[in-house]
Image (cartoon, rainbow, N blue to C red; front, side, top):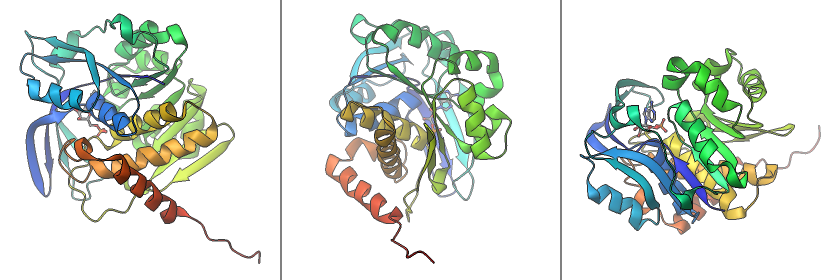
Length: 308
Ligand code: AMP
């Protein structure tokens, strides 16, 4: 199943208590595309960059098998820029800068070959732009999987509500779920978010794993306990791409495949945080992923317990 990934392709400046990286490759669509490629899913990328975006970055995506026909270059402008600083626990961060630059005027116009994907994967992006992509790509009745973040929940709440009504699977972190729903409890928050449209909701809880609300069931996946976390940036987008990639690989969207997809997404996210930016994701091999998925299974296997 082909995946259309739309989101940001960016320059990021990241500060953690342990290091700093300046103007490195980032963006929600970058992480999501690369993650989906690790599981071998066919990925079509639609995003905009400025005249300052190096060809070497485009080549990095292309060489991993990402279709970049829809990566638009707005030569007169600058690439989207984001800067963030992580706190000591690496679980929380402050956004220091969000410069929309070329994104401010970006109106996606999908190439003809992008218009019938089986999965639409909407990375973090202006919800009005997300809606326009759904309009253009809905010919084949795709599964729409989307992410959003506090920036859009605060700045464009009405557009976000309209887009959510057209989303099948929403992937958000715990704070975003609370903010979106106005509920502090995550089970209640998920119910409220599902009432806005998405039939399935995934709530990511950083180092505490992820919850999947699908059909009548709830599934809880752990996060992999890593000893060296270098840079959490992109973990959420990597999860999104890995989740979509697994559904694509299996050609299915039933609850069991969704559960597996949560584990694949979590396993891929556990790689990306091991280095700054997408560096680690760029060289994860399928066998590395298989080994980590197996480690996840062992991590959360509940032993049989005799009834009391
Ligand atoms: P994550 O750590 O998964 O939340 O994603 C971080 C990535 O999202 C960074 O690479 C940023 O370039 C990108 N990003 C940050 N803010 C925004 C925003 N408002 N809209 C779209 N992408 C963003």
